[in-house]
Length: 539
Image (cartoon, rainbow, N blue to C red; front, side, top):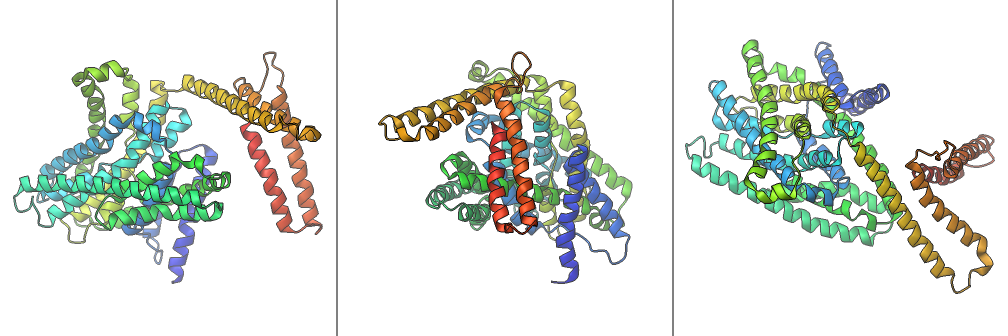
């Protein structure tokens, strides 16, 4: 491995972390600033002799970045909530992707002379699927209703499968099947067959692997081994499906949703480690991906040398506008048409506010999967350089235009979940009280035979701990203050205990510095204090 490769492996993540840290410190959108930073770095590097080029490797994106990102999102999703919104998710992840691909493909075919229809549809499939990372981050920060967030997350989990399958069909057609030879009917049948096979086989493989991995995770009780297996699961699920030309995306998503739904059956150690591992890995992969997007501009511009810049800019403007308009039109139509056609839907579901529909329609930021798919095109693929440029414009344009305006739109339309947040806190308090009640009942069962009469201090401490957890949840509804504005006992307890923990840490560090204890001892004791403070944060 040469020095340049090592520098790329080190500098790229380091730069991404630095930019992301600055964005978080300033309260700015991390994805947007990373893309802009990538653009600036790429343009500067292109003018400095000897600077390395960070060319996007589609194999790395599709086989290294995509599976863990999908798996992490699936683990963090809710099977029950996804089931509740299955119709809108299906309409967006399947219907919208195919609709957008058709609209953009037909427009591009009519607009660009000499571009085959199949190549135009390949472009449509490439730019059709949104990446909800940026949208969901903003939605959660601004407190959008949970249903909207669930729909956006569900769409992002499944739309890549539809888009990548449609893209492969279009590429195959451009290579000499169906459309090129004039057999459009055969192409439509074969395309439908490939879509159904990829989806069905991907779901089946994912379900089988989910059951197998679920059983394995229950058998292994060691948190380190369990989480090591968890890191391998997305890659195994993706490759197993892709090996038989099924949808690796669907396979990974099914496994992730299933294991996330059963996460409470694993050990507490597994859950604690899993949360930390996937939180950091997810963050690192996402920021590197967004930086890579911006870095691609110089390489893409090189391929357009000799073409009329004004004509190419016109193509880009039309495709960019079509990508945005197609989503808004489909979201509004997909929301209202089912209600018009089905009386059951009208009776069962309330009419969603127009503001909610508009927010979902505007959350169409594209991501790195689109660029990775475009880079997989062979060098002699018809219109490859133009397709790469148009894809880049749609990806960066939606991230900048929709990404920057998305928070403003949410505030302007006043789409919030204030009542939902209060209901969540109320439900959490009720759940904490019910759990504490079960714990106290179990404690009474264990002590009713009188065996523990000589250990009343232990029993009283356990009883106090359970009661304090239940009361703390109710007190959080009032922000830690009582009706008279005074600090509640639980809030006072947490404040004083945190101060005590800080004093304990200071003593431990001083003892380590004085060589009275070893670093290993310091880490063990500090870890226990950290766990206790993490518990305080939830009480």
